[in-house]
Figure 1 (tube, rainbow, N blue to C red):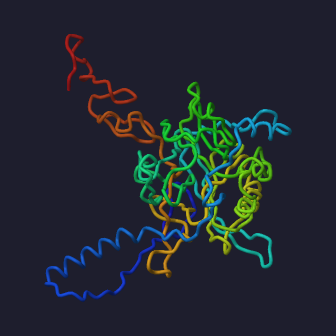
Figure 2 (cartoon, one colour; figure 1 turned 180 degrees about the horizontal axis):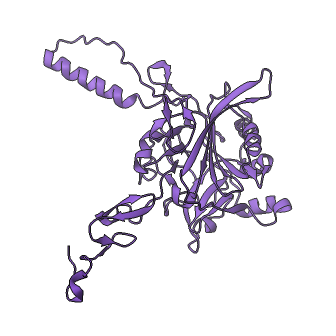
Figure 3 (tube, rainbow, N blue to C red; figure 1 turned 180 degrees about the vertical axis):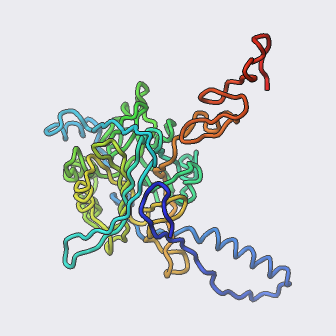
Length: 405
Protein backbone atom coordinates (compact mmCIF):
# COMPACT_ATOMS: atom_id res chain seq x y z
CA UNK A 1 0.00 0.00 0.00
CA UNK A 2 1.04 3.58 -0.55
CA UNK A 3 -0.55 6.79 0.63
CA UNK A 4 -0.50 9.87 -1.59
CA UNK A 5 0.93 12.86 0.34
CA UNK A 6 -1.42 15.33 -1.32
CA UNK A 7 -4.50 14.09 0.53
CA UNK A 8 -5.72 11.24 -1.65
CA UNK A 9 -7.14 8.00 -0.37
CA UNK A 10 -4.82 5.10 0.21
CA UNK A 11 -4.47 3.12 -2.98
CA UNK A 12 -3.19 -0.36 -3.66
CA UNK A 13 -0.46 -0.25 -6.29
CA UNK A 14 0.73 -3.09 -8.47
CA UNK A 15 4.12 -3.62 -10.00
CA UNK A 16 4.25 -6.30 -12.66
CA UNK A 17 7.28 -8.56 -12.38
CA UNK A 18 7.91 -11.39 -14.76
CA UNK A 19 9.72 -14.45 -13.51
CA UNK A 20 12.41 -15.75 -15.92
CA UNK A 21 11.66 -19.01 -17.67
CA UNK A 22 13.91 -21.97 -17.14
CA UNK A 23 16.19 -22.45 -20.10
CA UNK A 24 18.95 -24.83 -21.03
CA UNK A 25 22.07 -24.09 -23.07
CA UNK A 26 22.86 -27.07 -25.29
CA UNK A 27 26.20 -25.93 -26.68
CA UNK A 28 29.49 -26.51 -24.88
CA UNK A 29 30.54 -23.31 -23.12
CA UNK A 30 32.92 -22.39 -20.35
CA UNK A 31 31.77 -21.48 -16.84
CA UNK A 32 32.66 -17.83 -17.52
CA UNK A 33 30.62 -17.83 -20.74
CA UNK A 34 27.71 -19.40 -18.88
CA UNK A 35 27.76 -16.59 -16.34
CA UNK A 36 27.96 -14.01 -19.11
CA UNK A 37 24.95 -15.53 -20.92
CA UNK A 38 22.98 -15.69 -17.67
CA UNK A 39 23.74 -12.03 -16.94
CA UNK A 40 22.67 -10.95 -20.44
CA UNK A 41 19.42 -12.93 -20.19
CA UNK A 42 18.70 -11.50 -16.73
CA UNK A 43 19.22 -7.92 -17.93
CA UNK A 44 17.02 -8.54 -20.99
CA UNK A 45 14.23 -9.82 -18.76
CA UNK A 46 14.54 -6.82 -16.42
CA UNK A 47 14.23 -4.39 -19.31
CA UNK A 48 11.37 -6.17 -21.05
CA UNK A 49 9.32 -6.99 -17.96
CA UNK A 50 7.89 -3.47 -18.12
CA UNK A 51 6.64 -3.82 -21.70
CA UNK A 52 3.24 -5.32 -22.45
CA UNK A 53 2.27 -7.38 -25.47
CA UNK A 54 -0.33 -4.74 -26.53
CA UNK A 55 -3.22 -7.21 -26.69
CA UNK A 56 -6.05 -4.96 -25.40
CA UNK A 57 -6.46 -2.62 -28.36
CA UNK A 58 -9.32 -0.10 -28.38
CA UNK A 59 -9.20 2.01 -31.54
CA UNK A 60 -11.80 4.52 -32.74
CA UNK A 61 -10.78 4.09 -36.38
CA UNK A 62 -10.12 1.10 -38.61
CA UNK A 63 -6.47 0.04 -38.31
CA UNK A 64 -5.95 0.42 -42.08
CA UNK A 65 -7.42 3.94 -42.23
CA UNK A 66 -5.92 7.23 -41.09
CA UNK A 67 -6.57 8.56 -37.61
CA UNK A 68 -9.28 11.22 -37.53
CA UNK A 69 -12.14 12.37 -39.77
CA UNK A 70 -11.65 13.86 -43.22
CA UNK A 71 -13.93 16.89 -42.74
CA UNK A 72 -12.58 20.41 -42.30
CA UNK A 73 -13.01 22.77 -39.37
CA UNK A 74 -15.47 24.82 -41.47
CA UNK A 75 -17.62 21.72 -41.96
CA UNK A 76 -17.45 21.06 -38.23
CA UNK A 77 -18.54 24.63 -37.49
CA UNK A 78 -21.46 24.38 -39.91
CA UNK A 79 -22.49 21.03 -38.43
CA UNK A 80 -22.59 22.37 -34.87
CA UNK A 81 -24.01 25.82 -35.68
CA UNK A 82 -27.63 24.89 -34.95
CA UNK A 83 -27.18 24.71 -31.17
CA UNK A 84 -23.91 26.54 -30.48
CA UNK A 85 -23.61 29.25 -33.10
CA UNK A 86 -20.14 29.48 -34.60
CA UNK A 87 -18.40 28.16 -31.47
CA UNK A 88 -16.68 24.81 -31.96
CA UNK A 89 -15.01 24.80 -28.54
CA UNK A 90 -15.65 25.96 -24.99
CA UNK A 91 -13.36 27.92 -22.68
CA UNK A 92 -13.24 28.20 -18.92
CA UNK A 93 -10.93 30.22 -16.61
CA UNK A 94 -8.71 27.89 -14.64
CA UNK A 95 -8.55 27.89 -10.86
CA UNK A 96 -5.47 29.82 -9.70
CA UNK A 97 -5.50 28.85 -6.03
CA UNK A 98 -2.06 28.49 -4.49
CA UNK A 99 -3.39 26.41 -1.61
CA UNK A 100 -1.85 23.03 -0.97
CA UNK A 101 -2.02 20.24 -1.84
CA UNK A 102 -1.55 20.76 -5.59
CA UNK A 103 -3.91 17.86 -6.30
CA UNK A 104 -6.11 15.36 -4.53
CA UNK A 105 -6.63 11.85 -5.89
CA UNK A 106 -9.68 9.87 -4.78
CA UNK A 107 -10.41 6.18 -5.27
CA UNK A 108 -13.95 5.17 -6.23
CA UNK A 109 -15.86 1.89 -6.50
CA UNK A 110 -19.21 2.49 -8.21
CA UNK A 111 -22.01 0.23 -9.39
CA UNK A 112 -23.62 0.59 -12.80
CA UNK A 113 -26.99 -0.76 -13.89
CA UNK A 114 -27.07 -3.95 -15.90
CA UNK A 115 -27.80 -7.66 -15.62
CA UNK A 116 -26.08 -8.22 -13.32
CA UNK A 117 -24.97 -4.88 -11.91
CA UNK A 118 -21.28 -4.25 -12.47
CA UNK A 119 -18.72 -2.67 -10.19
CA UNK A 120 -16.21 -0.27 -11.73
CA UNK A 121 -13.23 1.13 -9.85
CA UNK A 122 -10.71 3.83 -10.61
CA UNK A 123 -9.57 7.33 -9.66
CA UNK A 124 -10.56 10.99 -9.80
CA UNK A 125 -7.80 13.60 -9.48
CA UNK A 126 -8.79 17.23 -8.72
CA UNK A 127 -6.08 19.76 -9.61
CA UNK A 128 -5.63 23.36 -8.47
CA UNK A 129 -3.98 26.06 -10.59
CA UNK A 130 -3.55 23.88 -13.71
CA UNK A 131 -1.72 26.64 -15.62
CA UNK A 132 1.25 26.13 -13.29
CA UNK A 133 0.76 22.53 -12.20
CA UNK A 134 -0.20 20.57 -15.35
CA UNK A 135 1.97 19.65 -18.32
CA UNK A 136 1.59 17.51 -21.42
CA UNK A 137 4.81 15.50 -21.73
CA UNK A 138 6.20 13.66 -24.74
CA UNK A 139 6.92 9.94 -24.34
CA UNK A 140 10.31 9.44 -22.73
CA UNK A 141 10.84 13.20 -22.39
CA UNK A 142 11.44 16.03 -24.91
CA UNK A 143 11.86 14.79 -28.49
CA UNK A 144 9.87 11.60 -27.95
CA UNK A 145 7.27 12.39 -30.62
CA UNK A 146 9.89 13.36 -33.22
CA UNK A 147 11.70 10.09 -32.51
CA UNK A 148 8.50 8.02 -32.78
CA UNK A 149 9.07 6.29 -29.47
CA UNK A 150 6.74 5.15 -26.73
CA UNK A 151 7.39 4.78 -23.02
CA UNK A 152 5.46 3.64 -19.97
CA UNK A 153 3.92 6.41 -17.90
CA UNK A 154 6.26 5.39 -15.07
CA UNK A 155 9.24 6.09 -17.33
CA UNK A 156 8.01 9.47 -18.60
CA UNK A 157 7.05 10.89 -15.18
CA UNK A 158 10.75 11.17 -14.31
CA UNK A 159 11.10 14.02 -16.82
CA UNK A 160 8.38 16.13 -15.19
CA UNK A 161 8.68 15.28 -11.48
CA UNK A 162 5.04 14.24 -11.70
CA UNK A 163 3.02 13.69 -8.53
CA UNK A 164 0.15 12.22 -10.56
CA UNK A 165 0.17 11.20 -14.22
CA UNK A 166 -2.15 9.57 -16.74
CA UNK A 167 -1.67 8.49 -20.32
CA UNK A 168 -2.73 11.17 -22.78
CA UNK A 169 -3.13 11.22 -26.56
CA UNK A 170 -3.43 8.44 -29.10
CA UNK A 171 -0.55 6.92 -31.05
CA UNK A 172 0.04 4.57 -33.97
CA UNK A 173 0.65 1.15 -32.44
CA UNK A 174 2.75 0.10 -35.45
CA UNK A 175 4.96 3.14 -36.10
CA UNK A 176 4.59 4.64 -32.57
CA UNK A 177 3.87 8.06 -34.10
CA UNK A 178 2.16 10.56 -31.79
CA UNK A 179 -1.27 11.42 -33.20
CA UNK A 180 -3.08 14.76 -33.14
CA UNK A 181 -1.90 18.09 -31.75
CA UNK A 182 0.80 18.21 -29.11
CA UNK A 183 2.00 21.31 -27.23
CA UNK A 184 4.29 20.62 -24.29
CA UNK A 185 5.27 23.40 -21.86
CA UNK A 186 4.86 26.08 -24.50
CA UNK A 187 6.59 24.18 -27.32
CA UNK A 188 4.59 23.21 -30.40
CA UNK A 189 5.64 19.59 -30.85
CA UNK A 190 3.11 18.55 -33.47
CA UNK A 191 0.38 20.22 -35.52
CA UNK A 192 -2.39 17.96 -36.83
CA UNK A 193 -3.20 20.54 -39.53
CA UNK A 194 -6.78 20.99 -38.46
CA UNK A 195 -7.92 17.36 -38.08
CA UNK A 196 -11.19 17.51 -36.16
CA UNK A 197 -10.79 15.41 -33.04
CA UNK A 198 -11.66 16.61 -29.55
CA UNK A 199 -8.92 18.72 -27.95
CA UNK A 200 -7.89 19.78 -24.47
CA UNK A 201 -5.53 22.69 -23.97
CA UNK A 202 -4.41 25.45 -21.62
CA UNK A 203 -3.58 28.89 -23.02
CA UNK A 204 -0.96 31.29 -21.68
CA UNK A 205 -3.57 33.30 -19.77
CA UNK A 206 -4.75 30.18 -17.93
CA UNK A 207 -7.88 29.60 -20.01
CA UNK A 208 -8.80 25.94 -20.41
CA UNK A 209 -10.09 24.92 -23.85
CA UNK A 210 -12.19 21.88 -24.77
CA UNK A 211 -13.55 21.00 -28.22
CA UNK A 212 -12.63 21.38 -31.88
CA UNK A 213 -9.93 23.77 -33.10
CA UNK A 214 -8.88 25.12 -36.46
CA UNK A 215 -5.22 25.06 -37.41
CA UNK A 216 -5.13 28.85 -37.01
CA UNK A 217 -6.39 28.54 -33.44
CA UNK A 218 -3.76 25.92 -32.63
CA UNK A 219 -1.02 28.19 -34.00
CA UNK A 220 -2.32 31.40 -32.37
CA UNK A 221 0.53 33.55 -31.02
CA UNK A 222 -1.43 36.28 -29.18
CA UNK A 223 -2.60 33.90 -26.47
CA UNK A 224 -0.77 30.71 -27.38
CA UNK A 225 -1.38 27.24 -26.07
CA UNK A 226 1.14 26.20 -23.44
CA UNK A 227 -0.32 22.67 -23.21
CA UNK A 228 -2.41 20.83 -25.82
CA UNK A 229 -3.36 17.21 -26.46
CA UNK A 230 -5.85 15.48 -28.76
CA UNK A 231 -8.41 12.90 -27.71
CA UNK A 232 -11.33 11.28 -29.50
CA UNK A 233 -14.96 12.16 -28.61
CA UNK A 234 -16.11 15.24 -26.73
CA UNK A 235 -17.90 13.67 -23.76
CA UNK A 236 -19.46 16.66 -21.98
CA UNK A 237 -20.18 20.14 -23.28
CA UNK A 238 -21.33 22.71 -20.74
CA UNK A 239 -22.62 20.03 -18.40
CA UNK A 240 -24.50 17.97 -20.99
CA UNK A 241 -23.56 14.68 -22.63
CA UNK A 242 -22.26 15.52 -26.12
CA UNK A 243 -21.43 12.12 -27.62
CA UNK A 244 -24.02 12.05 -30.43
CA UNK A 245 -22.98 15.48 -31.72
CA UNK A 246 -19.32 14.58 -31.37
CA UNK A 247 -19.83 11.34 -33.29
CA UNK A 248 -21.27 13.28 -36.22
CA UNK A 249 -18.03 15.30 -36.37
CA UNK A 250 -15.38 12.71 -35.58
CA UNK A 251 -16.70 9.64 -37.42
CA UNK A 252 -14.92 9.56 -40.78
CA UNK A 253 -17.34 9.50 -43.72
CA UNK A 254 -14.84 7.43 -45.73
CA UNK A 255 -15.48 4.36 -43.53
CA UNK A 256 -18.55 2.66 -42.10
CA UNK A 257 -19.71 3.92 -38.73
CA UNK A 258 -19.62 0.44 -37.20
CA UNK A 259 -16.07 0.70 -35.91
CA UNK A 260 -16.66 4.12 -34.35
CA UNK A 261 -19.99 3.08 -32.80
CA UNK A 262 -18.33 0.00 -31.35
CA UNK A 263 -15.55 2.16 -29.90
CA UNK A 264 -18.18 4.25 -28.10
CA UNK A 265 -20.34 1.40 -26.80
CA UNK A 266 -17.71 -1.19 -25.82
CA UNK A 267 -16.89 -1.48 -22.14
CA UNK A 268 -13.19 -1.01 -21.49
CA UNK A 269 -10.63 0.79 -19.38
CA UNK A 270 -11.07 4.54 -19.97
CA UNK A 271 -9.36 7.85 -19.24
CA UNK A 272 -10.63 11.41 -19.61
CA UNK A 273 -9.72 15.00 -18.81
CA UNK A 274 -12.23 17.67 -17.83
CA UNK A 275 -12.99 20.51 -15.44
CA UNK A 276 -15.60 21.55 -12.89
CA UNK A 277 -17.26 24.93 -12.35
CA UNK A 278 -14.58 25.85 -9.80
CA UNK A 279 -12.01 25.84 -12.59
CA UNK A 280 -10.24 22.77 -11.25
CA UNK A 281 -8.85 20.39 -13.84
CA UNK A 282 -10.03 16.80 -13.37
CA UNK A 283 -8.30 13.62 -14.48
CA UNK A 284 -10.48 10.51 -14.63
CA UNK A 285 -9.39 6.89 -14.83
CA UNK A 286 -11.41 3.66 -14.88
CA UNK A 287 -9.82 0.23 -14.78
CA UNK A 288 -11.12 -2.42 -17.17
CA UNK A 289 -10.50 -4.69 -20.13
CA UNK A 290 -12.18 -4.40 -23.52
CA UNK A 291 -15.45 -6.39 -23.70
CA UNK A 292 -14.99 -7.72 -20.15
CA UNK A 293 -14.75 -4.93 -17.59
CA UNK A 294 -14.98 -1.16 -17.46
CA UNK A 295 -17.15 1.56 -18.99
CA UNK A 296 -18.62 2.57 -22.32
CA UNK A 297 -18.23 6.22 -23.31
CA UNK A 298 -21.93 6.74 -22.56
CA UNK A 299 -21.48 5.40 -19.04
CA UNK A 300 -18.34 7.43 -18.50
CA UNK A 301 -19.93 10.67 -19.72
CA UNK A 302 -22.98 10.29 -17.48
CA UNK A 303 -20.82 9.31 -14.50
CA UNK A 304 -18.62 12.39 -14.99
CA UNK A 305 -21.72 14.59 -15.29
CA UNK A 306 -23.08 13.19 -12.02
CA UNK A 307 -19.79 14.13 -10.31
CA UNK A 308 -20.03 17.77 -11.42
CA UNK A 309 -17.68 17.68 -14.41
CA UNK A 310 -18.66 20.45 -16.86
CA UNK A 311 -16.56 19.90 -20.01
CA UNK A 312 -14.57 16.75 -20.76
CA UNK A 313 -12.95 14.81 -23.61
CA UNK A 314 -12.02 11.15 -23.89
CA UNK A 315 -8.33 10.19 -23.98
CA UNK A 316 -6.66 6.93 -25.03
CA UNK A 317 -8.10 3.88 -23.28
CA UNK A 318 -8.04 0.09 -23.37
CA UNK A 319 -4.58 -1.26 -22.58
CA UNK A 320 -3.20 2.30 -22.69
CA UNK A 321 -5.19 3.40 -19.62
CA UNK A 322 -2.62 4.03 -16.89
CA UNK A 323 -2.50 5.99 -13.64
CA UNK A 324 0.76 6.60 -11.76
CA UNK A 325 0.97 8.12 -8.26
CA UNK A 326 4.33 9.33 -6.97
CA UNK A 327 6.14 7.31 -9.62
CA UNK A 328 4.33 4.07 -8.78
CA UNK A 329 1.75 2.25 -10.88
CA UNK A 330 -1.68 2.64 -9.23
CA UNK A 331 -3.91 1.19 -11.97
CA UNK A 332 -4.44 -2.43 -13.00
CA UNK A 333 -3.14 -2.93 -16.56
CA UNK A 334 -5.17 -5.02 -19.00
CA UNK A 335 -2.30 -5.95 -21.33
CA UNK A 336 -0.51 -9.21 -20.56
CA UNK A 337 3.20 -9.45 -19.87
CA UNK A 338 5.36 -11.13 -22.54
CA UNK A 339 5.82 -14.89 -22.23
CA UNK A 340 3.67 -15.20 -19.11
CA UNK A 341 -0.05 -14.49 -19.33
CA UNK A 342 -0.40 -14.85 -15.57
CA UNK A 343 0.84 -11.28 -15.10
CA UNK A 344 -0.31 -7.91 -16.43
CA UNK A 345 2.10 -5.19 -17.52
CA UNK A 346 1.64 -1.47 -18.28
CA UNK A 347 1.74 -0.49 -21.93
CA UNK A 348 4.32 1.83 -23.43
CA UNK A 349 2.24 4.82 -24.57
CA UNK A 350 2.55 8.22 -26.17
CA UNK A 351 2.02 11.56 -24.40
CA UNK A 352 1.03 11.81 -20.75
CA UNK A 353 -0.79 14.41 -18.65
CA UNK A 354 1.48 15.23 -15.71
CA UNK A 355 0.54 16.94 -12.43
CA UNK A 356 3.48 18.51 -10.63
CA UNK A 357 4.45 21.23 -8.19
CA UNK A 358 4.71 24.65 -9.88
CA UNK A 359 7.92 24.99 -11.87
CA UNK A 360 10.35 27.85 -11.29
CA UNK A 361 11.78 30.04 -14.05
CA UNK A 362 14.49 28.99 -14.64
CA UNK A 363 13.80 25.51 -13.24
CA UNK A 364 17.16 25.36 -11.42
CA UNK A 365 16.95 28.97 -10.13
CA UNK A 366 20.11 29.76 -12.07
CA UNK A 367 22.11 27.37 -9.94
CA UNK A 368 21.89 29.81 -7.02
CA UNK A 369 18.86 28.51 -5.16
CA UNK A 370 16.27 25.80 -4.75
CA UNK A 371 12.82 25.71 -6.34
CA UNK A 372 10.18 25.25 -3.64
CA UNK A 373 6.48 25.37 -4.52
CA UNK A 374 7.17 27.47 -7.61
CA UNK A 375 9.42 30.05 -5.91
CA UNK A 376 13.20 30.23 -5.85
CA UNK A 377 14.74 30.15 -2.38
CA UNK A 378 18.10 31.79 -3.05
CA UNK A 379 21.34 30.85 -1.35
CA UNK A 380 24.17 33.07 -0.13
CA UNK A 381 23.91 36.67 -1.28
CA UNK A 382 21.85 35.82 -4.35
CA UNK A 383 18.37 37.36 -4.59
CA UNK A 384 15.58 38.12 -7.05
CA UNK A 385 12.74 35.95 -8.32
CA UNK A 386 15.23 33.91 -10.38
CA UNK A 387 18.17 34.19 -7.94
CA UNK A 388 20.00 36.24 -10.58
CA UNK A 389 20.89 39.33 -8.50
CA UNK A 390 24.06 39.24 -6.40
CA UNK A 391 24.41 41.56 -3.39
CA UNK A 392 27.59 41.58 -1.28
CA UNK A 393 26.17 41.99 2.18
CA UNK A 394 24.46 44.99 3.78
CA UNK A 395 26.82 47.63 2.37
CA UNK A 396 27.06 45.99 -1.07
CA UNK A 397 30.59 47.33 -1.72
CA UNK A 398 29.44 50.75 -0.41
CA UNK A 399 28.50 51.67 -3.94
CA UNK A 400 32.19 51.80 -4.96
CA UNK A 401 32.62 48.40 -6.57
CA UNK A 402 30.95 45.48 -8.28
CA UNK A 403 29.87 42.40 -6.38
CA UNK A 404 31.28 39.31 -8.10
CA UNK A 405 30.92 36.45 -5.62
